[in-house]
Every structure is written in C-alpha cells, then in structure tokens.
Amino acid sequence: MCGIVGYIGEKVATPILINGLKKLEYRGYDSAGIAIFDKGNLDVIKCKGRLASLEEKVEKDTPDGTIGIGHTRWATHGEPNDINSHPHISHSGKIAVVHNGIIENYMKLKEFLQSKGFNFVSDTDTEVVAHLVEYHYKGDLVQAVMESINELEGSYALGVICKDCSDVFVAARKDSPLIVGLGKGENFIASDIPAILEYTRDIYILEDKEVVVLKKDEVQVFNIHGAEVKKDIFHVNWDVAAAEKSGYEHFMMKEMCEEPKVIRDTINPRIKDGKIVLDDIKITPEDLKNIEKVYIVACGTAYHAGVVGKYIIEKLARIPVEVDVASEFRYRDPLVGDKNLVIIISQSGETIDTLFALRESKKRGARVLSIVNVVGSSIARESHDVLYTWAGPEIAVASTKAYNTQLAALYLVALDFAYKKGTMDEEAYARTIEELKNLPAALEQVLANKEVIQKFASQHYNAKSTFFIGRGLDYALSMEGSLKLKEISYIHSEAYAGGELKHGTIALIEKGTLVICPMTQESLLEKMISNIKEVKARGAVVLAITQERNKEVEKAADIVVYVPDVDSLIAPVVAVTPMQLFAYYMAVEKGCDVDKPRNLAKSVTVE
Image (cartoon, rainbow, N blue to C red):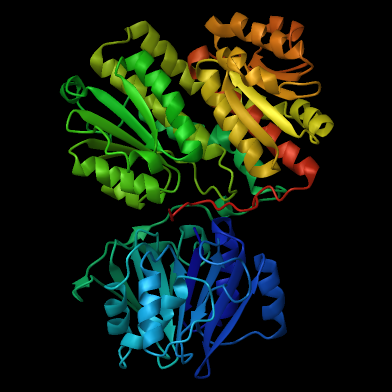
C-alpha cells in the first residue's frame, strides 16, 4: 500500500521524485523519504508525516544527483516515525532500499543477519532487505538483488540503489505492483501510472519475480533465473489532467463530478445496435448452461458493488450467486470448481487478497471474469475474461466513480447473461438498455442538486453515530453509504437491513440519532416507510433518498433527496451518489482531510 518512485537520467532527481510521490500519496502518507546518489554518496532525507514535511526538509538541502528512489509509507511494521520511514540503508551505508509489501520471513532473516554482525535500527521488515542485499553484494548489484529476493517470502516491490553504482539502479516485484517508465535519456519506476505520466506514456508492466535494471538510456528485464525477458511496451492514453484536481478543492469532489462521463464511457461502447456486446468476454450461451453458481469476490467498496451484482444477476439471469469477502474466501477452502464462474472486482487490479482469491479459484478449475479499472493490472492479466470500467485515475482514497462504474459493468454482465440464457424477454431487455443509456443524464441532475445534501450535512456533522437502513438493493446501497461516511468523516456508522430493525438494532435508536434511508425499490417502499416511522417514534432524524415520483416519502422523512425517476432495478447507480456527497460534506464540515483519511490507503497490496 506504500508508494514507490525511482529515477535515473540527466536531470536532478529530487524534484522528479517529490512530484511522483505527490501522485502516489493516496497509497500511504504516514511518512515519506528519498535517497539520492550524489557525488559518490547516498543522501537520504526522510521524515514522519505528510509529504509536505519532506518537501520542507528537501528545500533546505536539495541533493543534485541524477539517480534516486522515493517512498511514501502506509505503516505495517513499526509505528510511523523518522527511523521507520523509507528509504532504509544497509549496515555500511552502501545500499538504499524502498519497499512496498510485507516480508513474511523477516524475523528469521533478521536473526541470521544479526548473527553476521548486521545492526538494525528500525522496527520494519524492509530494513532486512537492505542488509540482505549488502550481504550478497560482491560488486554486482543485480546479482545481489536476485540472490536476495530468492530468500524473501511474502510480497514486495523494491527499488535499490548502491553507493558503488553511479549509472544504474535495480528494481523487482512480487505480488505488489511496479511499472517501468521509458523515457528519452531517462527511465523511471513507480507503483502506479500517475506518478510518471507527466514524463512518459510508454511503460513496461512487470510480472512477478521479474528484476529490472535501469540505466539512463537502457532498460533490461530479467526473470528470477537471470534470463532476459522481452517486454511489450504499453502506451498510456490518459490525459495528464485526469490525475490533477483541475480547480476542485478535493479529488473526491472532482471524481464524483466525473461520474456521468465515466458511466457513459463504460456503458456506451458496449451497446451496439440495441444489444450488449462485451468483446472481451468470451462466455457463450453453452458456457452459461454449465455454470451452476457464480461467486463474486472482492474487498471493501468493490464487495458492496458485488452485493448489488448478486441481486441483479440472480434476478435477470436466474443463476445463483454468492458474494464473498476476498480475505475470507481464500482461506476457507471454498467449494469452487469447473462449474463455477468467479467474478473478481477490484479498482486497482492489484488488491492482494482479491488477487490471491483469483489464483485460488483458477487452481480449482473455475473460470474467472474480472471487473477492473486499470489496464494491464495483475488481476486483469491473470483472468480468463476482463471487463474494464474506464473510470480513469481515481486519486481520492475513498472510492466514488470507480464504484459507480463497477455497478455499470455488473449490469452489463447481468444483461448479457440474461439475453444469452433467454431469461429476459426482448421488451424488458430493450427497456433496461435504454435506462442504462440514460444514467449519465440522471447523474448530472443529482450532482446539480447537491446543495440540499450540503445543507443537511452542515446541520448534522456533529452526529456521533449514524445508521443506514434499506431493503433489497437499497440494503446493498446502505452498506456502501455507511462505509463512505466512516472512511472520511470518522463518524461511527452502521448499515442494516430494514427488516432487521425489530431484531435488536432499534435498541440503538435514541433522540437525535441520524438515519439515512435509500428508498428506490418500488415494491418495498411501504415497508421502508414503516421502518422510518419506527425510528422516528424513537427520536431519529431521517434523511431519505428516493425517486421524484415517490412524493409520499415526504410524509415520513424529515428531509427527502430526490433522484430522477429511474427504474428501481438500476437505481443503485444513481442513488449512491447522494450518499457519497453526504459523506463528503460531513467530512468537510468536520475539517477532515477528505482525500487522505487517517489510517487508510487507496490500493491495499498487503494482507
């Protein structure tokens, strides 16, 4: 979950590293640091806190070397402080290392290295790597890195520079993302594309256990056995502005405002002549006949999208669906085999638990379809079929537009399956496709009326505890709305199925308790109005979210936020946005750091 960047070329490395780390700070911001090869020495500057603290230190004494590595940290081993910050230096000061991942056998390696006279100063697992590379170093840095990673257990993306090497640095990866940027007279490494997008659009995507040797005008990639690997160049077509705030106060607001566009980009190219056409999914009608059950596996926000996916795939395609948290799925000996389809959902395509769940599923013979946002990511490459969401870069830690596009992708899959299986008549199929095509316009209306939510948040941001209740698809929405509020405002929040209130939950409702009720399912509207009356009778303050046609909700709720009159089936794509806005405005009113909430990172690449 940490961010890594590296540079070698003819320019001063420091400002390039700092700029790259700014684009990666969403991956972790407990501490930051750089190591620069400068006039035969390794200059290391690092400190606890946000990148701004590092910038202040660098301004006072800027190394002017042209080789360097940088790191922004999400703490795993050892508390956030100056000593535990990366880069870490080896025993003699000869080797500097940055690392994303977890070295699982670090204690065993630490004991061995201590027996050889190596002294440790930090509490991190990464310091082991620096000492281990020095232990193996006999004048050949590449060989030393290869021998070292053969002894490492766990996950890693590494950047390594050496005091003896004035024209080269080395990087390697296993189960943690790392890309190589290819420039003219300069080359880069980074954990993610935005870090180097300003400098190059041509990249190599490294595979597990590949080692890359970078010089200013040459890049070589080797496998773990030392054989050179020929890589295809991947050209990034993102607009540089996609990774910038573009005048918005926060990335999160910018990304919510991009939801109409990214929904359009995700849906429209897949609708041709009134039919869903998913060119990258080769699942035939015959394949669908042999699928006895679908498993949707994901983490966090993507898991909540999967819960919506369960409802719509079962309803439209009539295939049983089970939704599982990836970190649980992979360890519970799942009953997955060749008659199952596993749908993997991940924004980054690098979520470690989800990636391992994918591998476990393939090992057991299941077919894997991934829904991801990042082209060429590990999950995309290792899946049998892939459906990209085209959300573009999402920088804010709390996911918004990526979630909406994941929902859109799931609707496309459900409709495609239903059509191929014949479980949906032509009229309903055509009507639902038209509803999907109208989603961008509906989202534009929601965003245009966000002041109602802003005003409500300004009146209730001091809430100590908030409850989200819903039924059917609205319960799935409640789970995501609750998570958003917790993530960025730090207000305790829980989501409950409306029908469960009387089974214990209602004991928590008292005077002034804030309750948010998505109410988009026509067949369940009266039931939810009853639930509102139950919590109102006990003193709750209720914000309801529903379609414009449901005016009767005004008689029950304190405040009603209306969304356009979309069909109940696809309402989650539109109705989640008001809950995202609610979480955003609550956090802003409290003075929270919306884009970088405490203790969190964007891409969870460690267990």
